[in-house]
Image (cartoon, rainbow, N blue to C red; front, side, top):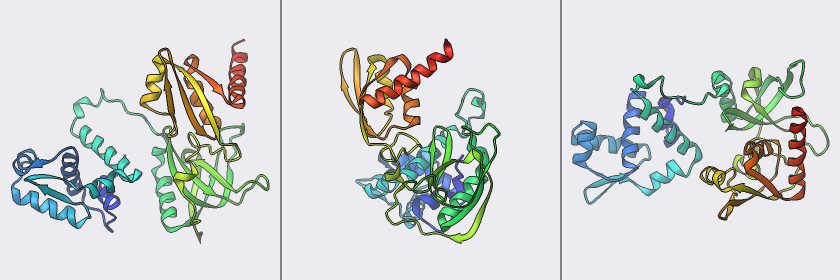
Length: 315
């Protein structure tokens, strides 16, 4: 869960976090104004406060770079303030998350009837906190990492000095992307992706590093489906055929930002431009009998090989 005390500090770039009670009140005020304009009477009735309090909130938000405008007696969030919230992925995620928290707040009677997804690495908030602190100060980190795949003895590998570039949440797990000095070959740039729930003995190092000026976390993952970058693979144009009934789900929740669709009566053809890696293949396999890879041939062949291996297990 997000600590609501720090929300306005992140959103407005202030140096100190507002108290939880204050930030909750302002967030609810913002959440109401972001939907549609309201006049003063509507606001005072809804929040059960007087006009002076509403004006005090507006001034306090202005001091934190959030502008509330009055247009013909209707109060609303300025376009610049909406941009501040929704054009920044972190701010947008925080705003939506805290909106959900406020929606659920006070509904303890429904606790057994509201089921949420569990994020394993959220149990290890200390690791995330240390990594974020290292990213803020550009400090190297030291940790042990236990691979799940191809590691029958569960033997941890030591990383003495890793440089944390960014973090990413994907399929209920937090990951940190680091530059390391371990390289498998001359073409290996040393970049590694680590799942936080597989990290142990994490410590900050005193030494610092310089984040490359041309590094962009968004660009780093732009051409991939999930967390596996597949940087050695070619950027491919991939076409998949999906039965009409299942196409509705993919249309509503695209697999990748490059997704385009050709819609027909009984099926749709979805096109993606990315570097196919294992997590993308897993996403395609998740669609089961409803999906067929049409092209390119190498991606189609890779899917056939994976399906063939699955069939062997059932022979």
